[in-house]
Image 1 (cartoon, rainbow, N blue to C red):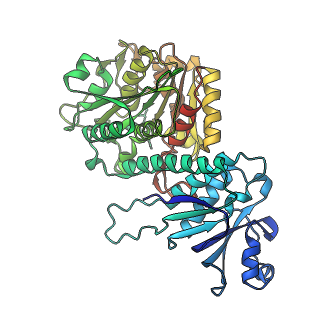
Image 2: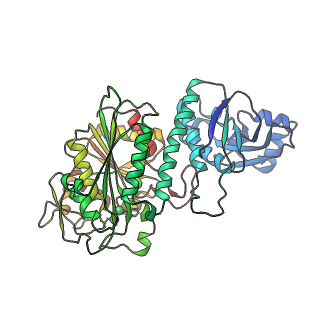
Image 3: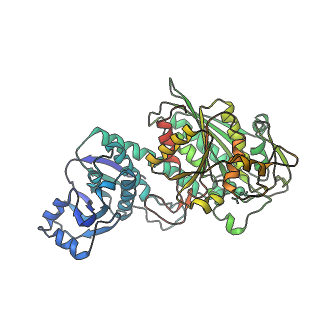
Length: 492
Ligand code: BES
Ligand code: MN
Ligand code: ZN
């Protein structure tokens, strides 16, 4: 359960009181209360422990029961000038991890942000950081010790912007956690049909229209990529379409997410090690569905449509073979030379449909290439796209949401590496490296005239260690950017 947030004017009764301290051990807001409780010896105590107030540094202070809080924690926040929304998101995640044994935490942290930072954005980032930092996936742990943190009391001057920011941050974090849970779930427990059913349930409670294509419907919809990849699995594919349509919507944004519930590579089988984390190959789909679930609650004004192909990529007697040719929804033919390059095949159908239905702009999220991890690591996604204004809009939304991405090129002259001897395209490059860019160039063939951005999240979707608001395992990367993008969407 995510914690609740409440604004209080004075330091209240709590299990833990967290006070920010700036670089150079300069006391932040609320430190005076602690100093009073320890008879004016706080500065001396801090000096002796060599606590400097570096961002993320923590120091417990014994107060001998002279404060309304049971215990006190000093939390380093670094220099105030650079303590912005991204920094408070990270720092409050540290706070949440340290507060795992406190049911109620009170903190003055929000008042430590740089004065030029918007209070609503800071409050949102604070709530996100606490909820995300607290996350653990414990479903399959029999001796699970869940975090006890249930209530967060934000000690600050009551203000409508802060209240709205906290509520928004808590709602967005809830969606990110939902995505993480689904990504961390073993593949056996999330067939394409299961994910589609789950999404239908979400649609019912979130004011979305849902349509799920299965079997013959996929054939009639000419989803050659989805059918081709899905054929090797005993668990048949689905195609999910979710629609959020508020009255008097100004424009239509299309979200596309890669939903490979397990990627064995198919007949171009991966190694054992390469398969270990492939239950997370539906992270794009999870991010898109999670983002859709928030739109009504957050009062989004634009129409938003999600296109989510759901498949399992498996080897079998029925699996597509290297050398087979698939015909995609937009009529283009693809020679499949490597069945492990499956993401682009299912995205081809989804992008075709999104552009056909007249989206004003498209963004897709996909764990598409191992190569993007070589280039950018696991904290920065690769961004490619066809329209400078749309690319700028996505980048700015990501910046506000605190998710990192880097613009990569789509070099026209690399397109020839996708020329096939017998079809319109081949699904892997015939040479020349740049695996991430050629995957992008492949997708571009299916986007029609719509401004389009592709995020390769193969690196960022999963983390191998805890890092502030990013959890080990599925990260839910992209949810925050998609929600911000939908909230501020303008036709590019
Ligand atoms: N799902 C993988 C990409 C991936 C790799 C995601 C590692 C996360 C971690 C994708 O379907 C894939 O297999 N891509 C191939 C493409 C190649 C065959 C052209 C890859 O990156 O090796
Ligand atoms: Mn693959
Ligand atoms: Zn894949």
